[in-house]
Image 1 (cartoon, one colour):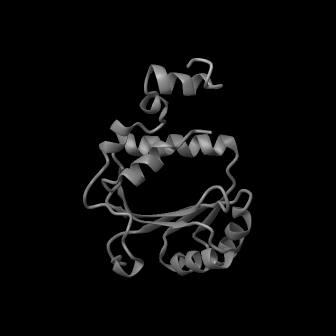
Image 2 (spheres, one colour):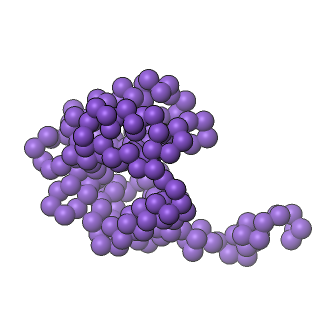
Length: 176
């Protein structure tokens, strides 16, 4: 059995111990402290009260291997509440752009990945909307963003729904 996996980490996880919790930058225990039934990933934009706090949007671009994902948060007091997650799988650039540009007028701030495939969408959005920040994501910036995210969870400045999908996605965050 030891000769099967060509990867030491895979061997340890499969046969010796579960390393998933130990290798997660955002541990399941940490994420659980910020889960709240009042948070949701499914709220439609029309259902979001425009007077109930500033809206923020994060956009991570992909195309074939990774999904394009938009996370919409509402700042209430000093806590960011997840309100909607929009995922695009095998969706044309034109459709993604239409959804993004439909959201932008209501957002206080938008950070969008300006690396690779995201460069064009970020540039176009930034030209049309001042609240859009095109963020190139070299390893050093990814590490900084991951650290900021972990700190927000540690300070309980984020609320996410009780959702295995959200939990698994956040647990997969790596600093580089």
